[in-house]
Length: 399
Ligand code: CTP
Image 1 (tube, helix red, strand yellow):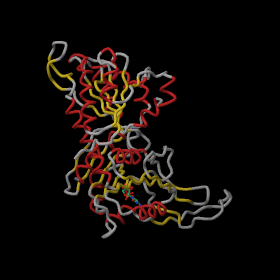
Image 2 (cartoon, protein in one colour; image 1 turned 120 degrees about the vertical axis):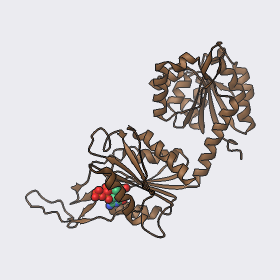
Image 3 (cartoon, protein in one colour; image 1 turned 60 degrees about the vertical axis):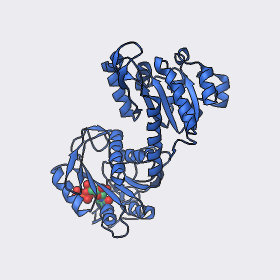
Image 4 (cartoon, helix red, strand yellow; image 1 turned 60 degrees about the horizontal axis):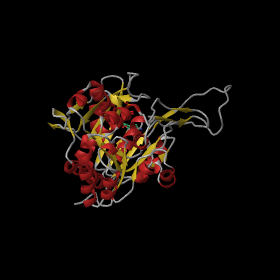
């Protein structure tokens, strides 16, 4: 099935000998029914002519960051917003370096930096350039930023040398895009729910008990679900994080509100409970602010365990339920117990006693415990990358 039909692709052509292959990419994408707009860097114009690109794409080309004409019609922000995906082919070592440092000194790099879309880079360069530690470091950075990298492949190069650095063939690039859109389409039919952040359990109208959760991991998971095409709802306790575009966001304060929001959101195909829900609420919550002269005796009662309730429920339980376990000691033992007692498909456990990971940090280090009692430990990584790794596993589990 053709999943590229009617897709809008912004093709950025950089200056390298393999730029001529971008013409074949345009031809193949057009044949599949895609609309294409192209940006040519100044050096790309030394390898392919704007006229040939415009003729094949049947669209004008964009090449100037400061063009009055383009700015009034389609500026650098609109160009990126217009597209469903950005493809940079070929991507030179210079462009890789610029993107990894956030340099935006021409139209191509500015559009990419301003983009909220998935970006596919197709590197092409001499083998020594590709293997240079600085290129490797830059590519790793870009992978961490969430860029997709297609190739390069091993082969004879235009410069006469042989090795890795050759641009992936246009048909394979188009296949990769086709697979990407097909995965999005498949996942689009799937509904996902994520809980995130802490809850606030009020003592009086101004005071509450809570915990150190920042909500970052849950937000990244929701972002990654959305990126993978899921119809995603994020139910979040109070955090300082920005709302994510394209995701249904439900703000709650207390565990009780979070529970009700979860019930309203069901049924879903996958539910990921990453919120650090307060285990207790105040039984003797008062209406007016308690004055400091008064003495306070907090009378606590247990909150409902949202995850356990949903996951052990005959009719409400989603196809796939993932819980988290924040532990400071005996991580494996506690995680396995939670996996069993809360009837989860997976428990994602992390050690919250290390201040460099977990609560508040941009980094996390987790172990995933599976129903068959097997588990795998993932290395320390950015929460955003970790989220992508988790969702990749979720997608293959659901399929
Ligand atoms: N959870 C929940 N509702 C609660 C408490 C926890 O949904 N009232 C979920 C969390 O979102 C998480 C999992 O249960 O996915 C485990 O939470 P955690 O705080 O690690 O464990 P608790 O069940 O609270 O147990 P303990 O505090 O004893 O470790």
